[in-house]
Every structure is written in structure tokens, then in C-alpha cells.
Length: 224
Image 1 (cartoon, rainbow, N blue to C red):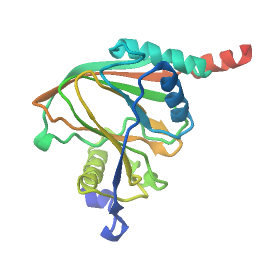
Image 2: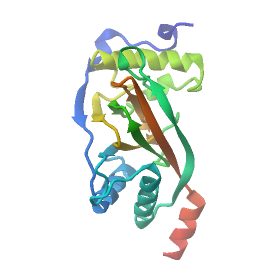
Image 3: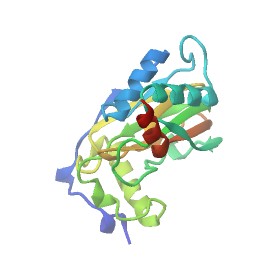
């Protein structure tokens, strides 16, 4: 089955994309504000540069604790879901694969904390359009879905998108060694699409995903 058989948009449906720089956070107060905006779908993500927070560099482990504390102050309880790390070899043309990690629209319940340990490249984060269900008929690990994502990713490389599937405003920045990007994996609009490019010969990453503990949040609500 070809990608066109799975999902196709007439060229007339494609519109130009535009890029906006992901906001930068450099202190605890700004971190809490940015996270609150993510929770209410006002912001898909933000960056923290290698200079860190409040004048001190942070690694991924320290960032997890800082994000967790800020979310707790906001009345939200997030725990570590999973962690991965390793080196990624530079792909053809340096372009990463556009992909999603969740498949449904939902209130923000999983947040990715992505650290570039060494190397670097561009990150692209995009939100789903109201017709995204058209491309979510297949499990994201299936060959059918990978073909869909490749087609959609090809549109973005050509600075075009079907706004019914991926909104035309792309949130981007260049990440270098020690930089972090924090973003929701899904929100009420749908899955959050993301792509990490590699400008260097390789890129070493350290990634943590924090997951909402709904039962703990309910207990917290009862005691406040």
C-alpha cells in the first residue's frame, strides 16, 4: 500500500508554513509560567539553553526535578515515565524523521524533556489540525503510519502543509550542546509532531518523558 493510498491531499489543499522561534526560559519563574501555558494549550514547548536556570547549568536529571517541582506548584503531579539516551548518526541531508509519540488528542498528560548532550541541529515542533484523525487510523509503529509521516514530513521540508493535518505555524530553534527543549507530546488539538535534525556528524541525546499521575493529582486536590 502506498502513502498516497493511505493519505493524500490535493496540492490545492497545501498552504505555506511559517516558523516562529521557540521561547527561551532561563529562570524558575519563567519555567513555571511556560509550563502553565503548555498545560492550557497556549504553548507547545520552549527551550532552555546550556547556561541553564537561574544562572546555573542543568543536565537532564536536574531539569526533571525542576520541571516536577514547578508542576507541583501548579497543582499538577507528574512522575518519570521513561528515559532514553544514546547517539544518533547524522541521517541523509541531516533531516530527522517527523513523528509523533502519542496518537490521540487529550489534555496534556505527557511532557518530553529532550537534552542535546553533544552535537546539534534544528528542532521542529508542530501542532495538529482539526482533521488529524484522517492520518491516525494506523498504529504509529506500523509501516502504514510511517509512510504517512514521511509524506507529511516531505511537505514540511518543502515549506508546505495541509492545515487540516498539521498547522502551518512551525515552532523551531537550533539546539547546541547542553541545550534542552521541553514540549507536550499531545494536547487537546491532537498529537504534537516533532523532528530533530542533525547538523553535526552525530548527536548525543538524553531524553526523559514525564507522565501525569492522575490519582495523585486527585488526592492532592482533596487536600487543598
